[in-house]
Image (cartoon, rainbow, N blue to C red):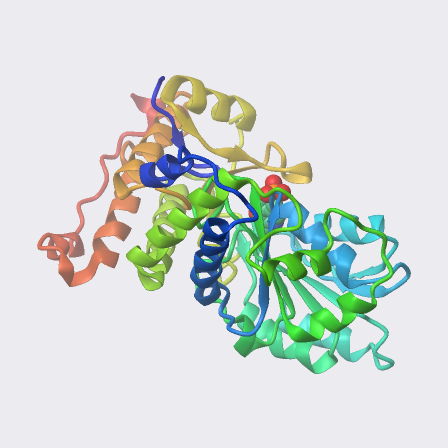
Length: 408
Ligand SMILES: *Cc1c(COP(=O)(O)O)cnc(C)c1O
């Protein structure tokens, strides 16, 4: 098989030992071995969600299934909720809520920007009768490369009192998240993003306040019922046959995560994201997310005039073995997106950026040869700090070779 570097924002490159875990013989999902597996996964997830108190349920689904379970189980038809989307995935929460008959008010934010805490505070303060039963938030918006400041938003939602549902599918694990301390009620994530396991499992952490609402919900649901999921989770099971092999992988992925250490994982994502932003900027693909709103798990770059995004991505994939993503909906053709998640090395990042640069050179896009890779390399060397003997040499960098493609 031709080697391919996967830099899409999920699913991501899965490390070999995690892949290998999937080839283990299957076990009885109603037996003690499965309960032990579920217990290990639960223990591994708790520090990542930042919760000791919540129930964490595992569902056999992609992230969207977890979000649907959360919304369908928590509210009742006609319940007013406030959604604060900052991109395509935020809008998916709205679509799910409407599907289940909720009355959705929307607080809009310009694409590329993060949700402004003041704007949310104002909107919730205006709800003097406390009509909103829920607030729907996105931790990391994968469609625009934007990350919301969940620590800053938390007290605002808490003051209002509505049940918060946080889509942290592409955020959880890549930086600090403190569900209990910040006071979020429901947080949803999935196996195939930061944790770098294959797709197939969503994880939903549900706090005590949310369970009260869930117990009172009249929304029809069957498979995606958090109450049933909790009942079985407390016995180390799932209500339905779970994707056992993916859970083997998730177990291994969590061991991998904690072996590396949360802080090291955060640093890796931050470093890769910075390197990619620096490279995109140097290559003339302005970063789409606004300063202060940058995601650490995905970087979106604006496609320059004269470059067709679809062709660029196809050529990268077919001719150079590098998979990046394009824009979704109204951003289609306007941006390219590069993920930082998964089992990718600095060398892989540099290789992918070099490939992007070569593909751009074919467009006569005025790239200074090596500018993107050099910018990324400088970030890697700087962020590695004093631990690298060659760090000092990066302080006086050489100018990139001034060879615009057009003049070659
Ligand atoms: C990936 C992702 C999802 C879930 O997508 P699935 O394809 O259903 O796993 C939801 N929200 C965000 C922000 C995501 O990045």
